[in-house]
Image 1 (cartoon, rainbow, N blue to C red):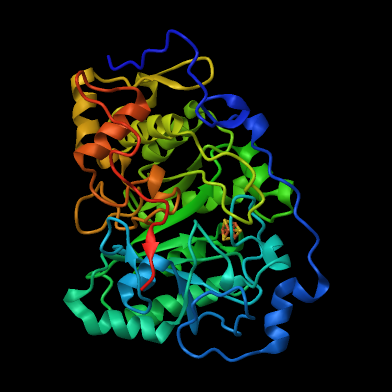
Image 2: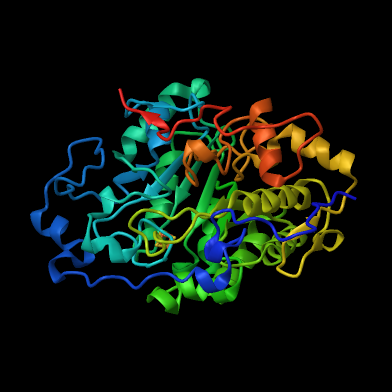
Length: 436
Ligand code: SF4
């Protein structure tokens, strides 16, 4: 069997409490600051009411214009570069394959998730359209302009998938429907499939069914937390946020019933205090339901309530990434794996030669998410450097080269005889984007 040898305690690798994993006790969010009355609910933006003029590139040195969905949507920096509404180059990526559209309002997301750059408490320090989210800015673009470009490009579009990301806002259910209709009126969803990253808190079963009827292909639920305790602490009562574990599971089960096998999934963030056994048991539960897990490595987002906490140590992340891939795509079950007393994977449950083949292919370490046109186990949504800097990549947004595999093996402590990796071999920079 494929065991990680651990005769002695592992040396510290930047995890919480000096351990090689982020333990629950150490991953406590900080309390939010008070929000000035004039900044609440997008007050500054709404009272100035500056009309938008086309594409808005985030700039926290001035007041954001008054933009709201469905007329406007935000998109990741990578998507804006790929769409051609913003200039810049990405480290080792020519483009992204997923056009992720985020609903936008001056009031912003009304939830307060502790790890998230879009959270409500940030009203105190920046307008919604200027908030960093998964490490990048999110330019705002008129929805019609987005659809015009993709419809015009036809078969030449670089995108393999479009995704509408809902946020927690009283308008988000209705506006998701409008944005989806605006898209499908001009772009055939069987040619360019659409995913919905949902907001269960405001949704009912009929909302899920309506999106399916309108042509959505995959429905995902951003569970994010791997256990009910972490969920409550990071996105429920612990941070004065409206979400509940129970409601998220209800909508996930609705998605299973309505979208069917392989067409639903859940996002999970690794390293917020769960054990490796916790998160992999959840991955197995999702697979047993017929769905997939889309995984992120915890990164302390600047301005979030967890920005003082350590990123997930790479060895913890790699073990979970590899084990998740085996469960999701190689029919290995969590019960075949072995864990130590801290819940860490010590045996992946398959022979070493088979494990080596999976590691050397590299797919297990790429960004996970809804598939594009390349393969079922390769995500269209590659989120370049959304969960790490390029100098220490967590989720690879491109196919791994031999030097990357050597680095991953070193992080897993599963080096092959005669092969080594030294820091700096891959010359990855700190900055992933060069603005022209
Ligand atoms: S609901 Fe989503 S967008 Fe809103 S704060 Fe939570 S994680 Fe961020």
